[in-house]
Length: 290
Image (cartoon, rainbow, N blue to C red; front, side):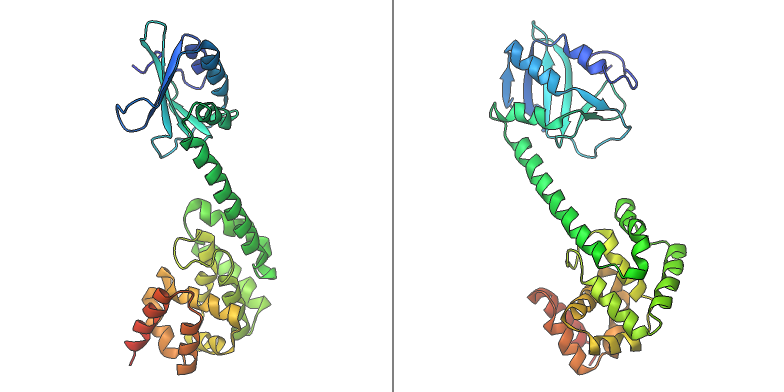
C-alpha cells in the first residue's frame, strides 16, 4: 500500500487532503536513503509548500526520470504521511496516482526549496528553460528555410521530432512529387536541399529528427546530379552537402557519393567541414577510394 492509503484514481484533490495531516517535511536527494538536504518544521512554511504542490491536471503521462528531489511528509509524531517527488518544475509523482500530475505552478515549489538552500532544482529549471528557448529559436529558423513549395508540410516535418521517426514512405513519396514539380531540374532541386540541410542546428549528430528530412530527399537523388550540384554549390549549400555526407544515415552510400565527386569538389567539401575531426573523417574516406 502506498503512503497515504490506497490509490485514488484521477482525483486531483487527493494529495492535498493527505498533506493536511503533515506537520513537517524532509527533503532529500533521489539516491536512496541519502542525508536529508533540509528539514522544515515551521507550520507556515509547510503550508506554503502544500499550496505550491497544487495540481492542475492528471494527463496520464509518466516522466522517465527518478525526479529532482523527494519530499517526505511526516505527522506531529514523526510518522510518515506520504512522499512525493518533483520533476523539472513541471510535474509531481505520488503513489496515490497511477501517473504523474502536472503542477499548477511548478516553479513555486522550486523557489520554496531555493530560499531554504536547496538551489539545484531551480537552477536546472531555469537552465532547461534557456535550452528550450534556444531550441525553439533554432526550430523557427529551420522552418523559414523549408523550400516554399513544401511549407504546407511544416507541421508534419516537426512532428517527426515528436515521434522520433523520419517521414514515412507514403509521405515521402507524396512530398517528393511536389518537390520535383517545383524544381524539375535535378541540380536546382539538390542545391535547394543542400541549403535546407545547412539550416537549423548545423550539428552533424544529435540534432532534432526533423533536420534529417532534407537528407531523406537527397537519398533519392542520382549521384551524378549530386556531384554536379556540389560543383556549383555556394558556401551555405556546400555546408549542407557536408552535413548530409557526414550524417549517420548516409554512411552506407558515402563511398558511392564521394567517388562521383571531382578532386576539386572533394577538396571543396573538406574545406567546408566545420571541425577538424569531421575533416579528418572525410579525408580518410576519400583516401580509401584511391
